[in-house]
Image 1 (spheres, chains in turn purple, brown):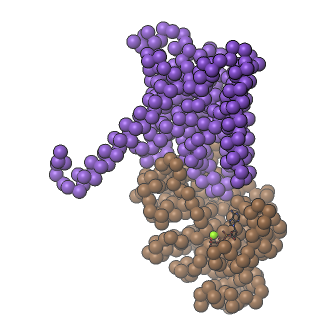
Image 2 (tube, rainbow over the protein chains, first blue to last red):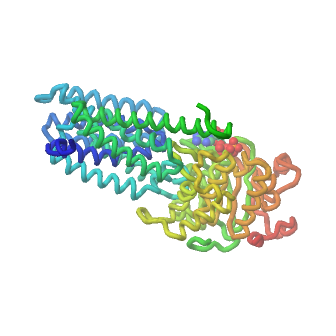
Image 3 (tube, each protein chain N blue to C red):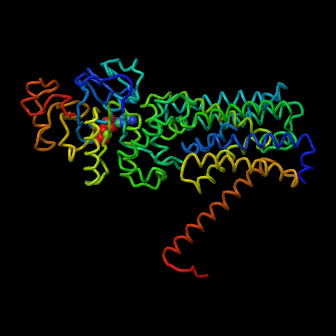
Length: 284
Length: 268
Ligand SMILES: Nc1ncnc2c1ncn2[C@@H]1O[C@H](COP(=O)(O)OP(=O)(O)OP(=O)(O)O)[C@@H](O)[C@H]1O
Ligand SMILES: [Mg+2]
């Protein structure tokens, strides 16, 4: 079965792209969850779509134009957050919806631009990853992981208590901007296999699953990377057999993992409580 | 336990002159003259909203200085680079983030300013972190998730985080609030040890409580101004307001001796 899967070039590329995004998305997402900004990746996906449309229109590589749009959006978001304006929330909404709306409009005007084409960008498709895409994804993933893992103590400190980090003399704005840019890069890595509307889920759900069973930041990071990798590769392979959009399959798998883990941990704590209350074998 | 550069006893470590600090463009505290000298233990008192935290935040560079000058260890604040020499325990804290983290992980984040990016934790860093956790009496919980600690224990984690950088000066915003009497005693004893080890302390509090024994100077804030700066007076908070006759900023050494306070630095 595995043999059949791997004999197609498009499938090999899709699986490599899945592996890259499966590792990078939770490594960034853990800091977004820590700051309770879980939805920011979603917004960047919206903005990236405008970049994709621009690429399609001008027949430039959409991956590169999406990267440009997402990074510009990320920097704008972070500067807005830093300025602390109370209207920041509304400004974000305007930017996000402006991004996705202009993306949809632009793509529909592109030669050969059809809604089906759009779906692949939004929800992922296994047939779309090109060799050139893979090169960009691999470089971005390496840079993202170098930053998220290499600078982990710093991102942890800045995300855990921004004010304290500032008092300690850390360049907080710099780290926030860097985190925003690597979030944007991760969104772009996701755009072939996972899709721009679903990438946020792959950043957040593996982390949410991991922290059900962990007590430390370090184990949360490592476990969420493992979960991200398994659901991304598994979902991509599954979408080949089930003929479903790969992004949707990956996220369904991730959410299912979360649900099962959540039920299992609840059952376990309920059981231990019962055994503690009534010593001896648990009845029933 | 020593950080780069030494501070001779008696030299100013924090110096505010005619300072105004605020938020947005509105100054909240005005015309503050305040000096913290190496080796001193000073408590900042005052009612809610008086501006105590704002003074502290101004010193730490968390709220902008709108008028006057601030120097740290004799260097103008905007040119001061060794911020880790000032340890900070914030008043309100969001110690529990969206992701679990252990006591050791949070305390280790206090040590970052001393480490280079991408550098691995050195043995000395680990020792300093473990020592800081030991000082606040949480060694047996060092691997526990901070979310499983009580509020008072979490506050002690934040004190340990400040200690992990081995700072020369500790600035603590209401370290005793929400801590029970027994643990306030323990905290006071801990602080006493730190002072004996050569640290300078600036504490914010509502009442002196068990800190009374070790405090050499009290500064009282009211409506954004400093209304008293001098030795502690027995008779409670009200006494400071009756004693309002102007700023008592610089007690001469003779008066200090007279009051039995001793000179700064002789506590060790
Ligand atoms: N972030 C902020 N933005 C705007 N105004 C603020 C901010 N923080 C405090 N203030 C204002 O500054 C004044 C002084 O506040 P501060 O926190 O310094 O008081 P405090 O003496 O520490 O009080 P407490 O005992 O309640 O901690 C208050 O009137 C408050 O409304
Ligand atoms: Mg306060």
